Structure formats: C-alpha cells, structure tokens
Amino acid sequence: MIDLDAIDFGGGDALVPVVAQHADTGEVLMLAYANREALDRTVSDGVLWFFSRSRRALWKKGETSGNELSVVSLRSDCDGDAVLARVLPAGPACHTGARSCFGAPPLLLELADVIRDRIDDPAPGSYTSTLVGDGNLRLKKLGEEVVEVAVALARGDRSGAAAEAADLLFHALVALMAAGVEPEIVLAELRARRSAS
Image (cartoon, rainbow, N blue to C red; front, side, top):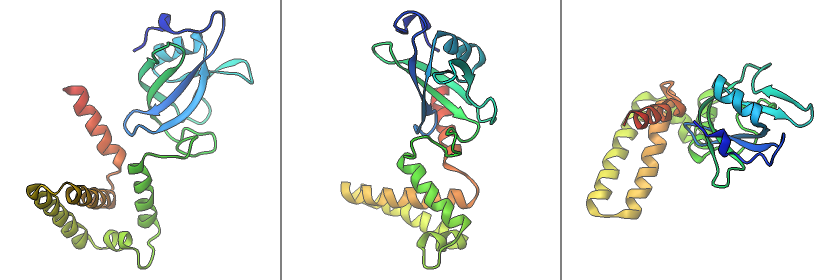
C-alpha cells in the first residue's frame, strides 16, 4: 500500500491533498485532504477517509450516500506531500451526483456517454442510433472494421491504420454497450489480467 511514515505532513496535524482516481478508467474523481489519522483509517478499512477542513473532523467518503471509494492502491508523490488513491467507486464521487467532481472524463468514457445517450434516447438520423437499433448492421460493421485495420497494417499505412483503429474502437464500444457491457467492465478485466501477470 503506502508507507505513511514517508508522507510529509509538515509536522503536527497538517493535511496532505489526496487525489482519488478511478483504478480502471484513470478518471480523476475528486480531491480532498487527509491527515495521518484519516490515512491510517483508509489503510485499515480499505475505503477512503478524509479530514474535513470546514468541520474540522474525519469523514469517510460515502458515509451518508453509500458512494464509498474502495481503495485499490495508495501512493505518495515524489516529494511525499500528496497522495494518489486509485479507487473503485460504489457510485458517483461528486456530492452533486456527478461521476467526477471535475466533469472531464477520459475520451473513452466521454464517447461511452454519447453512445449511452443514443441507447437511452435514439436520435433520428444518428449513425450511432442506427447501429444501436440494428444488431445485424452493428456486428457487420464491427467485422468490416477489423478487416480494414488488418489491411491498413499489412500495407504499412500508419495513418490509415490509426483511422481504421479509431473506427474499430467506436464500433466495438457501440456493440458492447448495446449488449449491456459497459467500458468499465472491459477495463476491470484488463486490470485483473495485468494484476495476474
């Protein structure tokens, strides 16, 4: 986990910033502050604890909402004066109900949000809505994109391969989400495989 003795709390009850980052997606979820006691509790409980500067008290993220942040890893920065908490959220991380306090998801999740909107509320004339509504077309396009990536790579066409790979990722994401497989599930599978190797 983390060597709390290596954290520079500046003496006494000083606080260090803690950045909570989604362990699978890389999305920055929130920033809060912790003292030594909050980080001790985080290590022992496996969920993030902070120190509220306004209330001058410890608080466990999700204590009232249930949206806890389960800790995958804790790391300090090179100076030991900030902490990165890689977490798996049980719900929205922001008190506003948003997934992140920063509203800037990684590109893959941003694209997934658009696809999810088209699944939930199909838009007439939308290519994504057309794919979502036609399973045969969706799978046909996925297969075509695989071949187009392979052909571009065989030709040594780097820019063409990149463009076709972008098409492939888009069509794979649409096909997965239309089948109820969210990108976070795929990313969690990748994390599990990385942990196993």
